[in-house]
Amino acid sequence: MRSTVIAVMLALVSLVAVGPQAGFVVAQDTSAQEALDQRVRDFLAAARWRSRTLNVSAADGQKLHDLIVENGYTRAVEVGTSTGHSTIWIAWALSKTGGKLITVEINERRHQRALANLEEAGLSSFVDARLADAHELVPELEGPFDFAFIDADKDWYVRYFNWLLPEIEVGGCFAAHNVSESGEGSPGENAPPGRMEEGTAEFVQEILATPSLNTEFFMDGGGLSISYKR
Ligand SMILES: C[S@@+](CC[C@H](N)C(=O)[O-])C[C@H]1O[C@@H](n2cnc3c(N)ncnc32)[C@H](O)[C@@H]1O
Image (tube, rainbow, N blue to C red):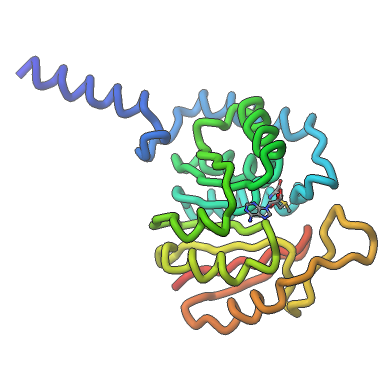
């Protein structure tokens, strides 16, 4: 009897120690989460996100974070890491839900910078950051996912959407950056005045015409479409 109790305790301890890297959903204890929250807040306040790496605004980052926390999402995918601003907001949310993110970036320098940023923010263990061409990687990804965020080459949004939608479970969410309901694109927060993102009109038509989705738009930042699968 005593050996059974010890075996169960050891199994529980090893499960907690392994954490989200092995795919287990493990919430952190309160004090560890508070310490992490402070570290991420400090990092976000100190980091300088640059226009040439096209990072999302804090408003969009906060929105992505809140979507994940409010819906309890745990299996996330991101296309277009850049240096990791949106990645940090998503990973921060996943640290609270006990989840994990796969993110992909084609540019090696940005990928390396994102890895360093995630390390500094204390979020590396919540992210599987891949250096790859999303055109090749995304069709190979196997779900189920409950959250997807697309922020890479705009003229590939429709293809990313068609590859990922079957992998997203009912109740899950597909979000995309630099779009608006009119389909005319939206001003990138960091873009020169008057410049509009191009290539997303076809994508917006596609999501609005997909019966299995409820779509809304968040326009406080660079324009986010948020589509829930029903
Ligand atoms: C708008 S930035 C992403 C910004 C990022 N989400 C953030 O908030 O920090 C778009 C990124 O997508 C990457 N990208 C473009 N085409 C890609 C592809 N085929 N595969 C992977 N990444 C790609 C670019 O190199 C660029 O860093």
